[in-house]
Length: 604
Ligand SMILES: [Zn+2]
Image (cartoon, rainbow, N blue to C red; front, side):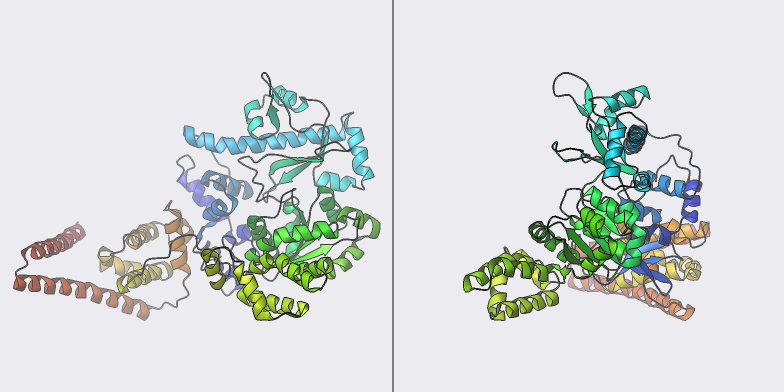
């Protein structure tokens, strides 16, 4: 735990924040009994097993085992450090944080990201000023208005202008005493190739600030206003800007995505701005990169269970290529995606300007699923001659193979076989043969899309099961903790992790009345955090009798173990195995010592 944030502040923040509120910013949740359920943002799944408990203020995924409290969620999902998660929540819930006594290392880690965010925000204001007031900004403003952007859009998306010239921003940072070295790290300026000094990365371009889910400026896109190249220039990856997780417009799309369970994915900045301007706010734009698995997970969190993505492309050819690129990532991410191809010569921006939003939505309603789209495109391209059919199958087999769900795959294969008039089994064989390695063939038969991050858990015996149940009982029926203490049952735990958690519960609950989210904070180890979350949420009904029975059962196993040891000692004596006897007697001695210690400890 970070030493420089006082414990009582962390507690205050934890008490003020609501985990359901925080999680539902990125994961669509629905109520299920006392808890909320949603699709896990940490692994791929089709049926929700990601559970959030408003009573206990914790989350746990029964699919992949991720779990913890509100801090753990922000750290794992937002990639924040603990101090950043604390800071973010403090800001959100209006709790003042003293920032003294930072260690050198903590200061460095904290300030690097924070400094970059501050510089980005400073740069955003600078570019905005240039657009709105600077003499040079007039032309840029004219350009934006000519492209149909309203003043409202320009304000809402905080568009700006980087003036022509080499060092406007460098000089601006110097004049307000900002650390130029950090501006370099933020990707805002670039080192000169020859000699010393720096120059501005973005010059004579319209500037589109890129925001993360918390509305922080993480990077920038810059577009030229003429035919100069490159047409688009983006910030490089920095400690705050991760391209494979960033999407333009994400911060403003959330609400509408949730309402419509649909997200439109467009390619360009102006496409996105037009979509928003015409009220189709459930839109994000890829920033010149292909969609990644992370993007798909993020979008899935936005549209929720049963939601879908619609990829909007400019023309047939580009659409087919893009669909081919993203089919695997959508299939593996188990997010239904449809392809919407606009009439030749149109992009979403020009289409909306020409025909308006109703026609756009009408065209969207006719969009096809990814595989049917690819089948029809291939049929159109190759025709249905024998040669054509062979080529179609070759074009489609990797897409077919990428379908994670075996039922869906088999249905698609069947459909393709019918469409081409070929035998289904032959087609299936042809597709299976493409599987590149035995490893891949295995996952085809396995459960679809389940990513196993860690090695399978070791086989646990009856003792472990009982110990786990005891800990679950302590978490869910804390009235029993006094009994467990009195009967000294914790001393007989054999699993070190469960024993540690059990002792932690006793300590924690003695001070803070069954506060589970706080208990989670006791451990830095994410596995222990997840274990506490898991055992707090197991679906069991606890009553006093059940608890008493469990404790009696546990005591019985302790006695049985003592007895077993005694029997082994006797057997060793009989057989004259002196070495074994020595080992067993030492074991017995150790146990006896433990008991004496416990008893003398109890007398104090
Ligand atoms: Zn999960």
